[in-house]
Image (tube, rainbow, N blue to C red; front, side, top):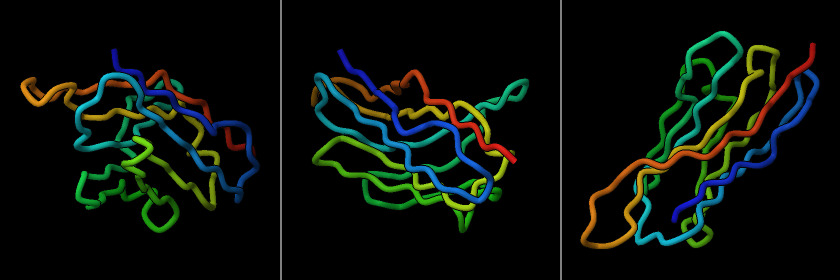
Length: 121
């Protein structure tokens, strides 16, 4: 069974920084793309940033230049460094990963439970 566990969320003042982590564990053969999504109260979930297994990244326009996504494949972990935070970043941040549990099986997407981030003004 595969688990994704996010950590690093919390309360921060506007202008501050947080670093989120998402660690995958369990029977994993390979991990393809990893990403961070967020869902603010009353809003739809949105993509924040994604990173492919080759290192290519993409970001939502609203976070470009302030957020950085990275991954450590040896640790099966993806990170999100968030700088210059503003109250609009308040949301639950979740980490999906597209992975394969065996060389013979198809890829599928697994999600973590999320970690809450609150930015106070």
